[in-house]
Amino acid sequence: MGTWRCAAAAVGPGRAMRFQLPAEGRAVVDGFVVNHAGAHRAYVNRCPHAGTALDRLPLRFLTEDGRYLVCSTHGAVFAPETGVCVEGPCPGARLLPLRVERVGEDLVISWPS
Image 1 (cartoon, rainbow, N blue to C red):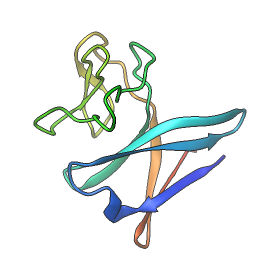
Image 2: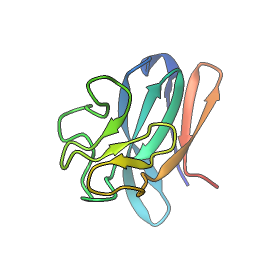
Image 3: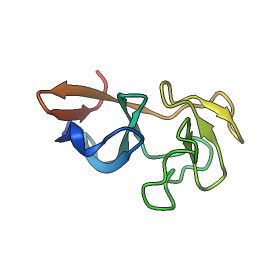
Image 4: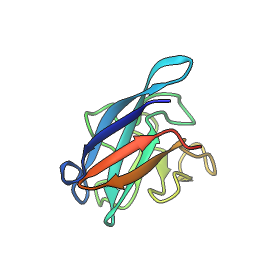
């Protein structure tokens, strides 16, 4: 399984970054990492309701107030801490999480064990 890394400072508070993660049996999977309330979380960039990328508008992963993740296709709203849909067309569905580790000044993102 592959990993992706970037400088943690590149994903400051309230910011997100999109990336491609190599995966076994697949070429690559689109993902994103977000810094919410000082914690970095990463998910596969695919809405469980529509199957589309959350950010149809480039790097628009957060609601305007920065409290939640949002799918720009149908407006599904997700808790950043868990990836669970809390409002919209797929309540209780969840984003597929990725592992985020801090290694020195970098974030290393990989598939969960």
